[in-house]
Length: 245
Length: 249
Image (cartoon, rainbow over all chains, first blue to last red; front, top):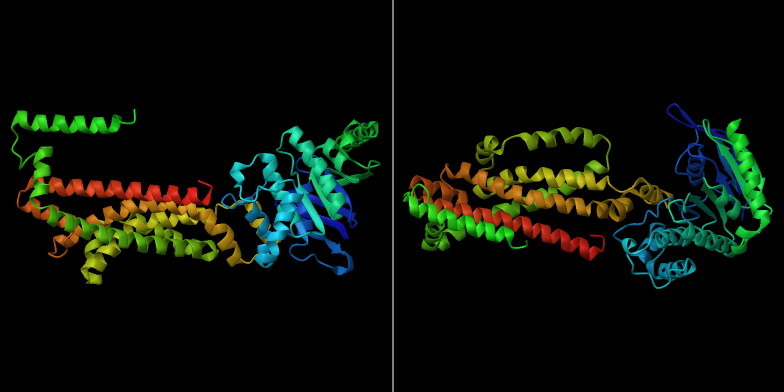
């Protein structure tokens, strides 16, 4: 789907990304894993087209630059419009891409239903819990049926139980929808649970150390699976080695 | 607890009345509350008509200040050059004492009502303008990124993100500007009144002063204070109602 080729990005004196190359295939679930300052969020913004690289380039397959609505983005905060209802928040991407309201509303209801928020259409963000707000945010990202879903530490601010539920639901959604997911996280457990492929990144300058392919087919039971524990151990070991180097 | 301010006010008025009566100060120096009420009741129509005239100037100025403030704030938000060009002049406008430029404006504008409105607008303009400008810039960068991601143009971003985000700021600015518009109107009336036209409360105060009708001066002053309090509470209530209706207040 996408080739990231020798990409570099510098902010002032900070080399956020240096010589980063990465291939992303259609339908994959890739995690970008690393500590703060390793440039994983910068890489995600480059893929989204919200920022441009200083060197190197991103090449889309068949030269198909994604059109608005073909990329969904989920931020660390839910970043909802506080004055708008859940339904209006989910409607926003369709509204901005010019889908008529009569056509959009069924999609909005379907998206809210898919994230388990059927019946919450009229709720305002401040009436919802942190986990529910994040669900609205995910529904908003999914409502355009994007080819590529970019997620920037979306569950980092949630409590662990809510986080586990959302991780499991996200996996089910991904298997359902068949879209490509690039997921930025600083949690080894999260990366190992969610991703088919884990990209290990190191800071100063931000670069890719190595990629680890997951042997798991994750579902809710995976957390108790010895293979999951082994993967966590492997990633932990490799990350420690990469950061010490 | 809730009635404490009212009780304090009542006690102060009683003490005031008692002090005036006990000391026997003549009412043309310090009138008691009852004398002030009597002065109002002697000519309620005249004073209330003047109050109406002052309020008309106040609200006209507030309307102009709010419209101009929002338009200029939006212009500033959608340009890089304009803020740099306009901001310093907005500050000049804010720090120039209105008393000093009111005579000039009255001479230039000519029409008495219009010149009063211009003076009050100058005083009321800055808070609503500065607040709205801050509100337009207050939307989180992630949301602005989201709008870019979906290919939203400048106009759509303004309409669906920046203006709604600025609404609470605008309403807070409007409340401050409302009080200032009244102050501006009264100051302008004082300047204009000495020129012999205008019919607002400030002119009544001047007129009563020349005639040593001190209770009537106080009556006009009390009306002005009450008007100021009403404007402040009214605009505060408006802000609460609008934000509650929108669901985020």
